[in-house]
Length: 208
Length: 256
Image (cartoon, rainbow over all chains, first blue to last red; front, side, top):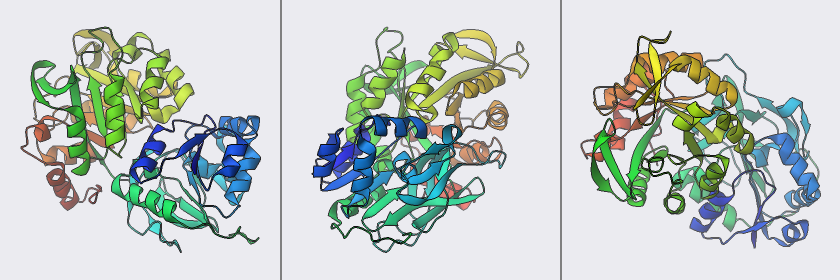
């Protein structure tokens, strides 16, 4: 079963519809036990980091997500669902996040002439060992905060003078700042690649 | 680098896409879902739907249509018309719309912008505005409401800044003077607003040829632009518009 984690961080309809178009009947799950039973996990998220973390903790989902992300099961984080995998976000005056991956989440700087939020299609530069994403592909982004480049970064994009993480990977854990569910045919093929990916071993130590 | 977006606009009346000039003389163009798929497959970067009769008929937006579009296209789309409260926004977003657009409602009740942004995030809340040239306000442009029918005395630039402060994540500047003319976008007020706010600004009204988009992006610093009549008529395709923009050195998404 492919589970979409529901922690009241935005709308899951388009994620569910896109997974259906890619061939998977995903289930929206709210309780940690259901999440533990899933073979594949999609961790979406739109909105603010602080309330997202509160909702995760209130539902006891934070430890289940942490466990799932490092279990070796295929795991896909999207947008805020990628950002809160990291240690700390600058958002809402500073928020401690899940700390699964090493890196910080920062706000795009003002005054560069580039608009914030970044809304729209941007091209990426990628070096992903499993080939989920490739250089010069264009994906749909909507965000004001970004994950700094870090050892898990497998794709970057450029906005407001910053080269930021467009995608990160640690074993079977893959996460994107952009929205594959809103990125047309390319996004669908990324979702298909995720749905076809085998489970791996739990990552053993190391930064990435 | 971020691409400039081309956004087809579909005005829906009684479940059909229609096109009129200055909201008049509407003609039938087709089924909204079929057109959404066609434009999405043809290179649209986003779509926007306006349920143009919802407000007049005092009914909420057609959620069945929103859900049908969400099932059929995999690119973002916004909906407007018939959004009267946060609950209407929620229904549209849960049906699969990426964003909701408020216009006259926000003029009557600006706090709807803040309420929507708090509930769903700024990125979901689009302010649509219909400025007209006017001697009555400092910028020389005044906001109209109810499909251009009522002048409000509100200055267009002041309104854009206020909406940004309230939490609007994007502003669509739909020029009353340019709408339906196909004589090019209204560069003056679009540019003035794009330079006054930090959120993305979408030029709307007046597109007639690819060079009009180049002007909106270069001279008015728009981040995106609405296209309607010139592609609805079959005269131009999105691919043709983007090809010309790419040749002019404007960053656009060219594969889809």
